Image 1 (tube, rainbow, N blue to C red):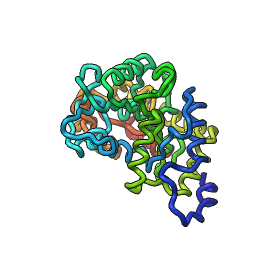
Image 2 (cartoon, rainbow, N blue to C red):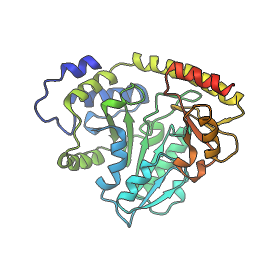
Image 3 (cartoon, one colour):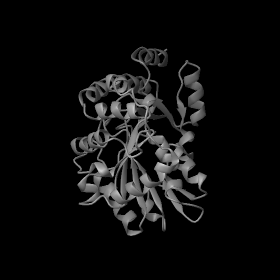
Amino acid sequence: MQAALSGAANASGYPTTAGSPAVRQAAADWINRRSGAEVAPVAVLPTVGSKEFVAWLPTLLGLGPNNRVVIPRIAYPTYAVGAAMVGAEIIATDRPEEVETPSLIWINSPSNPTGAVLSASRLAEIVAYGRSVSALVVSDECYLELGWEVDPVSILHPSVSGASQAGVLGLFSLSKRSNMAGYRFGFAAGDPKVVAALLALRKHLGMMVPAPVQAAAAAALADDSHVAEQRGRYARRRAVLRAALLQAGFTVDHSEAGLYLWATRGEPCWQSVGWFADRGVLVTPGDFYGVAGAQHVRVAMTATDGAVARFAKRLGE
């Protein structure tokens, strides 16, 4: 990946917003290989990291105060921030089919922060409802390759979206699977008409991924061996962190996929945050992700092996 980045360093011209043919093909091939879904390269849209797309999608769709945006009940805050930027009504629920006339439905499976994974049948129900009310259903799947107790299914899989990806988008990232957070590369894929409409706007907004980063992304998407190595590393850290949390009296809920453990002792999350801080450990308060997370903390597996070992030692003291 680094060799591809430096090899493409002579990039004095503007990159295309649509992405190079190589990176779009690599993304389409990866989707087919990993998710069992057929997506044409023209239905792939490179993004400047996936968070940028989450934040700006309501704006790019032309939503406003008369629109409803559905987000998960416990969710990364950027879903709500993007909707708030356009003044849309924000409804936090895990039952989007109970919301009348939504315009945009966000799914996050595997979830940040809970690590919960939606089944193919549940995803299909949400997609069917979205189509019935002409709402765009977007599934943020940046943790798709980090399933521990279950194998996450993409919204683009035929068992979910059927023979067509109409009305659905999957959102993917190289930050987690390839340890490329600093490169800022993600991509959306799915409904070709939606991708084309978003591309037409993004061209005028300067939302272009630098050409060297596109080259590095194409190299990353074409290689599966480094993903397996990353998975093994995280699995070992997860085992140490989970055992230490259970030994310290915490319950770990969900957490069947992703890079986090969703832990609780049935107390206010800030009380738990203080308990960890007293031991020199930094965790994220659950209420950062919504009121429903008020008794949980998020423990990340992204620390070094040495730091993870110190975590276990300090929790055991």
